[in-house]
Image (cartoon, rainbow, N blue to C red):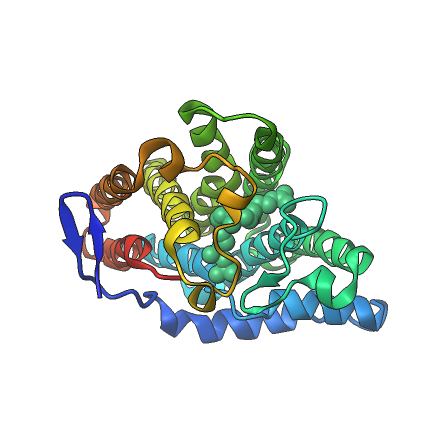
Length: 303
Ligand code: GRG
């Protein structure tokens, strides 16, 4: 199986690199999903249902790979990996709500609001956000690095990046977005979390600025490539494999990368972005090889 990427036919595996990290991530997430006796049982159930559903764990894998590439251990970076997944899971729960993208299927399961009702789904997302910062503040050492991680994630999750990108994306449903606006939406709604994931790895490792800057370039490029492939999968992918509905963008009349640039040029662009991302890893030498395989997975993925 391969993917036609403009001039190139990519035959790389579509299995996600870093699978050996997933067991550690899942176990830590389970621990952090235990809010203790003060949390109402139905809220705790809804949080666990969405957070522990079978996601790819791409962002936490990126945190851990970047941390390793910069010389940190997995256990040093695991709290940051879980914090990122909490923000990501909250954003998916809220994105699926009727007031936003109105989806009934996510990660192969009924969405949180379909299973638990809208109010509980909103609250589950709400609870995941402060939990992310509680984890960073409490479990990243030393405290100055914990504070730097909180600042990094807060900026990305906030009104100019994740939330701002989502607001522009919803707003753009009422008119035809141009290529510039579409890039700005993708960069903030999707790309920013990829950038922050690898930057958090570098920050936890207390890496020098040069390395964090290289990771920033890498994250920016794979983030946009990921969204382009997401648009292509929505247009051409299989629901059963994706675990979510397809053709949603066309149904909602949404402007997407393929609707502006066409399918072949979109694939070509994604391919170029991945090559740029891999070039940005040059200074890491062999330590960057896992991040490189992960970048190549992004263009070959089928879900
Ligand atoms: C509600 C503030 C707020 C933001 C929502 C995440 C998001 C922003 C929207 C989701 C809609 C969407 C399909 C975005 C495209 C990129 C994306 C985030 C895909 C889902 O990420 P995956 O494929 O999901 O890594 P899993 O389930 O594997 O974790």
